[in-house]
Length: 237
Length: 288
Ligand SMILES: Nc1ncnc2c1ncn2[C@@H]1O[C@H](COP(=O)(O)OP(=O)(O)O)[C@@H](O)[C@H]1O
Ligand SMILES: [Mg+2]
Image (cartoon, rainbow over all chains, first blue to last red; front, top):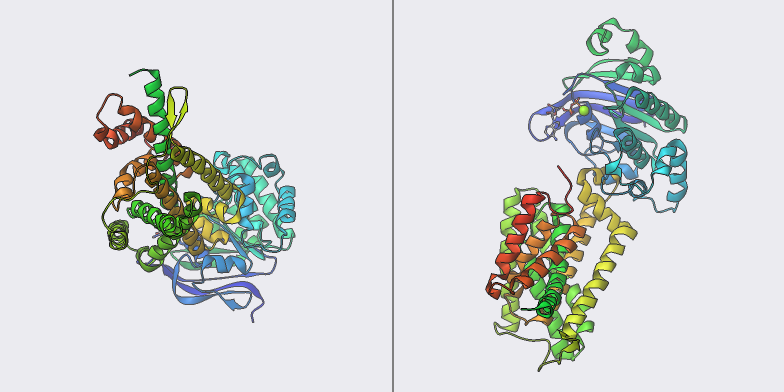
């Protein structure tokens, strides 16, 4: 048993052709915010998908709460308490906000869905106002809220966010990071990929720099921010 | 040709439209989720109609009692076809699935012919007197078809908007990958989609047989206008299929005011093509 919530160990694999992940490793502890940064095409999204059986892992292991979940079916992973907000197409566009959230609770059989939805409306009051609106007709920022709300419906132990602030206005970016801290305070671990690396690392406990499917650096959020080399390469100086 | 004749044709059109609608909803649901045009859909209609016919002819049950039996048969055979054949081919190229559904269509049709023979059959013996509304005529069968379709369409709507499985189907149709990482058991939803599509096809088959006659070719012949209706409504959009079915049905029947009836399928296609030139993703289709 490791003390880690999530432990990805030297993963090698991809989409059937060439390996995209070439030994990437990462851990997330209970209640941690962990950020992955790195250049485009580094395999950041692929690494996240590999936790949900969406990528074929040839070597290495994904351990969640002490259980081996390598290449496990996505619905079975979700059932174990890990949720995912993909980088794009992360809402059901023809369904209303409320229906999107209901789908998030699809696996829930304890009748706690209504209560959980109220909790999510407290975090994202905007969603409550717009509950009857089709998710596809909302702005990018609102859609990101729907996607996060959906992923929180099962009250997960850990939530994976792939570029939650991509394409948002500076104001929305600020708000999104605030929401993420708020979510983390509820006792939910956060693993996120971010292009707005500076802001993300400011709220992160730890961070990883991923390049070409491998770990390049790994340090506390503050440590990575203070690193000259990284600042030049990835944080825009 | 006066207004009464045109109204009469419009009534026939709505009846035909009901049948096409039921077929097109199933085609659209399946396409929405599996991205697969099921060419065996018409023959599931035929099978459903003959299954209902078996109940009517052996137990002397009324058609409305035989209808659910036909629908269950359509659902079971659709699910069986998926589990035995399509499921194994799902990860191959789409064209392989398409051709295998042609094969499935032939198998089902041959089975129907083997069991019930090639000759025409009919649900109703003798001639039912049509009812008169002013100068307009409506047969009792046509009223059954209309009423039955309305009930079934409302039931499908409630299923898709109120039940957990129905909403999961819509979610899968919106985005299969997202549905899976949301925790939806994709295989289970797919089985239920086949069951629903098959049951609706069977209902369409029973209604088509009520309106005309039972023949082993009946469903296959209806397949093209059904696809036209589904495409017109925006392929993969079950609500579009209702609109598409009605437009194709009414247009086909109205065309007989000026064209010989043999041109009905051609009319269906002409309507579809013209509308698609104007709205390339179908009437309810999203812009891409
Ligand atoms: N579904 C896919 N099928 C095949 N290759 C893919 C797929 N998704 C991503 N890739 C490839 O994997 C590599 C890494 O992509 P990705 O993980 O999305 O990078 P990042 O998120 O770091 O920008 C890229 O070369 C990309 O082309
Ligand atoms: Mg990415």
